[in-house]
Amino acid sequence: MTNKCLTVALHGGAGATRDRTYDAEIPHMRGLIEAARDRLKAGAAALDVAVETVAALEASGLYVAGRGASPNSAGRYELDASLMDGPSRRAGAVAALQGFRSPIAAARAVMERTPHVMLAGEGAADLARQAGLETIDDPDAWFTRAGRRPRENPAPLSHGTVGCVVRDAEGRLAAATSTGGVFNKLHGRVGDTPIPGAGTWADETVAVSCTGVGEYFIRSAAAAQVSFRMRLAGQDLASAAQATLDDLKALGGDGGLIAVAADGTLVTPYNTQGMKRATLTADGEIRSEVF
Image (cartoon, rainbow, N blue to C red; front, side):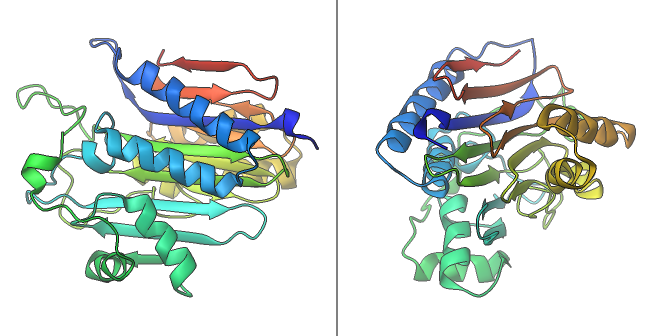
C-alpha cells in the first residue's frame, strides 16, 4: 500500500455533553491531525505519531488526561496510559502513575526499557524517574481539572480519555490511550485505558482506542473484541466496532471508540451524547467534531 492510505483518528473523550461548547477543543484537535499528517508524509512510524499525538492531548489541559486530570476521592492524581504496536504486538502501560506530566511517555518507557507490559504505582514512577521524564512540582497548580462537573451536579462515573490510532505509509498500525480516569474514583482504581485488549489494541488487522466507563470496556474486552470480530467472524470494521459497543451497552456501559483497519478505513462510533474526535481519512480529508 502507498502513502495515499495515511490514516489517523484521535479522540478527546466520549464524555461530551450538549450543555457546553467545545470552541477550544475542535480547532486543537484539527491542528493535531494536521501535524500527524505532516509527520506521516515525512515518513514517521505509526507508533511515533500515535504517542506524539496523545502526548500533545495530555499536555493541552483540555481533556481528562495528563494535565486535564482531576483528583481521585483521596485527593491524588493517579493517571493511566497504554500503547500498542500492531506489527509486533509489543505493548507498554502504566497505571495509577503519580507525579509525571506524560503518562503515555511512561508507558512507552515500560515497553522499551523493560521486559514487562505494565507497571503500576511507585514502580511506574520509579521507571519514569529513571527515564528522565518531566515531573510535576505542584499538582494543584499544574492540573486544570478539565471537564469537571459542579459539585452540586455530579454525574455517576463521569469520565474522559484521549487516544490516537494510526496507519502509516508502510501499512503499520498503532494505538495509544491516556486518561485521568472517572471523576472522584476510589484511590487505586484502574480502568480499561492501561489494559491492552480492553482500552487499547493494535495488531495486523486493526488499531483501537476506547473511551468511556472503563469497567464495562474491561468486562467486554472491547478493544480486542473489535479485532476478534474482524479476524475470526469476518466482520468489516464498521460492523465489528458497532457490535462491540452494542455488547458494552447491553452490560449497562457507555462510551465510544476510534479504530483504523489495515486497509485504511476508519470508524469513530459512540453511544453517548457526543465524543470529541478528529480524523484524517485515506483520501486526505480532515474532520474535527464533537456531536
